Amino acid sequence: MPKKWQEIIQAISGNNDIQTVPQLAELLNEPVSLSLMEALFKLRKEGYISWKPSKYLYLTGKGYQACEVVNAS
Image (tube, rainbow, N blue to C red; front, side, top):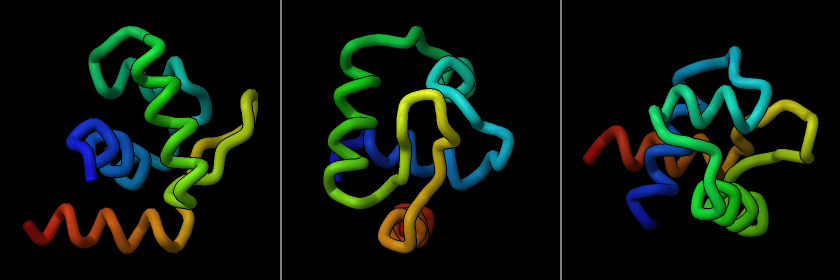
């Protein structure tokens, strides 16, 4: 799993207040960029997060499992 994906999954799992992409970008201390948006779309496509533009970002069951693996390593 790419490091960027791991960072996003950890940020979402550790902060239930994230509601928008700008809030996520702020938490990651980076701008809202094309690479961040691409990572979010790929994470959604792979089933790690549930996200619709203008809706909450949250992890799916698969996302929580991935987060546990990342945190264990």
